[in-house]
Length: 466
Image 1 (spheres, rainbow, N blue to C red):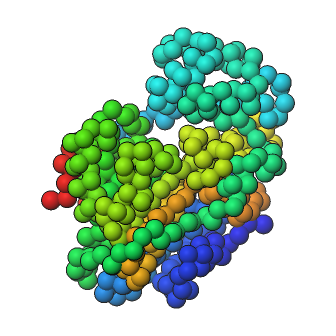
Image 2 (cartoon, rainbow, N blue to C red; image 1 turned 135 degrees about the vertical axis):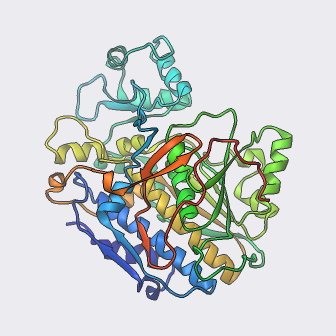
Image 3 (tube, rainbow, N blue to C red; image 1 turned 180 degrees about the vertical axis):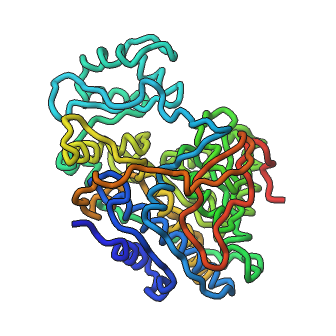
């Protein structure tokens, strides 16, 4: 049996100290299975999105707006979590040709590794470790042969030490025996900590028909999916979001989709002039959202404590793969790898009657974490207004995975209809070309969620709020 969507929402809402009355205007529709899976991916999508949307209404109400209803359909929320989009009619290539799962030496049910090679430097690092030629010409077949000579756990360890992104396959039972599981399980799903004293920050006046987060400034220093989607969600609810990319760092094609509603600037935080401009932007922000590994920004002078010193009253939000503590706290990771390492691929494959591991139907750890991150930021903003102080929000993909697991399994989950996106897509011009992407699944009765700014290429905007 799986947890009902209403129960999941109530648990998330109460877990951060919000009163039940705030859920009076929430309407949920739909049932599991939303997409083909033995896990409650529809419930996770719907509940995480619903609390983010409803908390935005709470902020609007605090700012003088009348209460409004929010409706979230499970199937629509699950489809949004699939992240489908087209640019100029073309579907992007999601995965590098050699990314994915490989059987390793031993031949047992857990003797597999997943490699993530969407960035060229990650691909070449894996190939060097396998003593194969670097570059795009090396084939999947060559990688299969090379990995067949490795133990899965040995390759995971050596790759992590080399700074690559690799995960050995584990069942959930095996994951429970790992010291990182204990570290993750000891953390709350959503961690909100007061990190300094400050008065409540002034928010601009809000018109009755404005989206509830209008005038709230978010400095978005994130990449890949979970962080950018959190920032995009806040933008849909009205926040002024400035995405900041490093000019030396690669991006994935999904930036065309995840940048909707945002400004987009460049800053190399190793450069003194760019650090100064970034610090100036930080002093004008209400929220600082970042998805780099723990302590990496601290080394550059922009950790949470630094941000609270530069901008007393700020809400800092930090996202990691495996949590802020434990032996894997500094390890790189993406949704697909966390699924592999924490048992989902083994259990999904077994439920499907497959002899090989099977991924979930979408990167739900990324997407649910994104909506939960937006929710947590909104809760911290409410606390900042009511109590003052600077605040630090922390979430991780692995902890979201434990939450998804706690929602239970779905009987006959693979009987669900496969994803079909056409009815939920909307077209817009962008700096990348004609964009066809999914509408936000949260339906507001008075101030509809929408992206007023088109997605634009990094560096289109100045790193300044004026």
